Image (tube, rainbow over all chains, first blue to last red; front, top):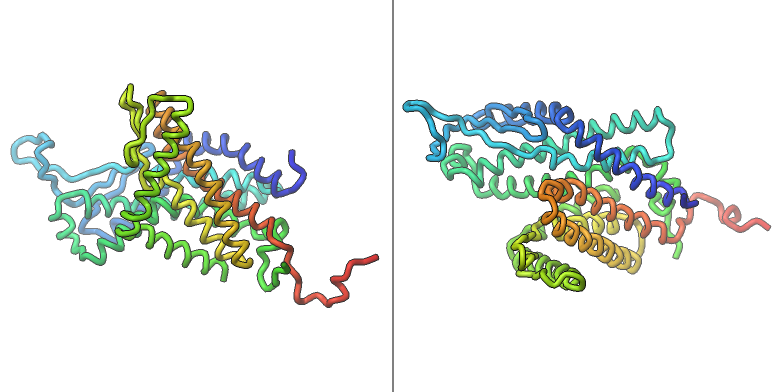
Amino acid sequence: MPRRPIDRFLVCVLLWLAPTFVVWYALGPLLLMPIAGWTHWVLTYGFPQAIAAVEPQGITVDIVTQFITTSANVALPPGAQAQLIFTINALQYTYGLPLLLALTLAAPTDIGDKLYRTMMGSMVFMLIPVWGIACDALKVLVFQMEPAIAEQMGTTPLTRELLALAYQLGYLILPAVAPILIWAAFHRDFLREWLPQTRQGQSISS
Amino acid sequence: MPLIIFALVLLALFVIELLGPVQTWVIQPFTAAIAKVSAVALQIFDSTVQADGIVLRNIQTGAAVSIQPGCNGVEAMICVIAAIVATPADWRRKMMGIGLGFMAIQTLNLVRIISLFYLLQWNPAWFEWAHLYLWQALIMLDGLVVYLFWVRMLPAPVDRDRPADAMAPSV
């Protein structure tokens, strides 16, 4: 084991990554239930004219819309109508969770502290997939469905640009950077101790 | 304050990255260069690999991977740059950290692309798993490691509140 605490910590993170990834993947469907529930609340409250429900299906979520599909690919009995539903891989927005768990478990704290910081960190992290899935669902409706749907939703060029930015942020940046920021926020004491260079209100001698 | 600087730099760089001209003139050529470098590295031991723009292809089996946004390491670099800029240090050291971050992230990204290229040919399900989840976390961890090592290389801070004689070495 390395002698420096920070080197020891990084080795422990690597060792913890494998079990945390296994546990995270095994518990994926369970983990996605509250995330789907919160996303359902956000989307049906924010866009009641577009989204009817968000339903967890294993590691994916079904987005049930208020729109009727006119796709020729859907075989329907005469007179019947089909509600437009699409699926999103929700787990791809949560891959930061095993990293957060590995970082938290590798920190030199006692077991009670680890449990507390794991619980609190995971609760905060859950907001990230909610953002990602919500933006992904809106992106599919506005950019990948018939233009009439975007019109019905009352989008403007500006809101479409903002949606594109929010989606990219929620897909490319937040799931990756959030675990590290959350971990750093819950471990400021260790960071100050390990890295005195990051302390505020002190000048750097060079 | 550093957190605000971090968030602002992160957002600004990310918005700049998404701009059409930046995508056309910087990101796409950079991504194509990554594909080219990956192909050159692969051809050392596998002559069936070819790079075609952002696509890496096995000319015998037809199996191909396309290097898309999120797979070129640019977003991880943006996070590292934002963290380094937000940390109190002189600009020479910051530029050194950014250079170090670029090298570390792109080196690991090369390993990611090569491993994913072969993983796809071996088992598409494992490819999906490694591509969507595992490598994303590892690249970000790489960014964190680089940042921590860079911070550790910075000189120790001087405590302004401490009296001068308290800082003198004891004999």
